Image (cartoon, rainbow, N blue to C red):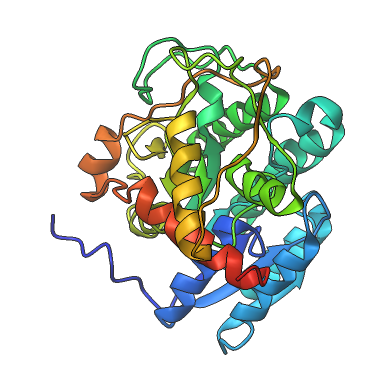
Length: 345
């Protein structure tokens, strides 16, 4: 390949929505480290601990080329103003109401952020043309698919949660805008992202919390070890490198719709129980003493899927990269950070 995917143009302006979020923070930091100008948007909602979002933003503050706007992408006027003021060249939409189970309790939040908010981003890109719109989709769009590994060409019309439905609608909306207005757009189907400074609503983070609270962890697999849940756990650094390489590789305008979708997953699914055992070992190493979780087994929750497993062939072909961090290495980084951040040592 002739293109150097690791060399971003630091004369361009990168707009990152959800900049105080897990993926948004790490992507912003990586761009700023390379001297890029980054405009971050986040509404700093309280879906999970806001202090963690502020802690991430504190780590971005020292960078001269970072501008932060507290705004909600569902506020069309605010988004329009940001585009008019900063004229971004590349937009990465990571702002979304996350979580599969929460979408059953609070559907309004998902429609506002993931549908109305994304529509506002598309409209802004339409009226203030950008070189590339990259946006977060999700592995949840594969829904009830039985065939593994999941490929981008698979049938994805069987979502089993509203969250998944909103992410699938994002892909359809982006395709339409790409077709009508020639907006180069790339959707990214993330597979269970984890790592330091991660989301407290994710299982691995919750397991660590429960251990220190002296409570048992709930495992939603009926205690069926032969038919365990499988997850393609993807370390945050791999996700960021994938996004970074794809940003400078927009779909060609000559196509009917300059729109592509890629899986970003580890292509190496782990049994949930193996992941939990690895987390115990890593936490033991971080603390210098043996850690064993007390476990309570429960039925699978509505909206959960038994397996996520990414085919990464398209990603490798496009940018010469596939996620590679092992869960041992990734979880050790998480537990080291967790114990330091929460002063558990």
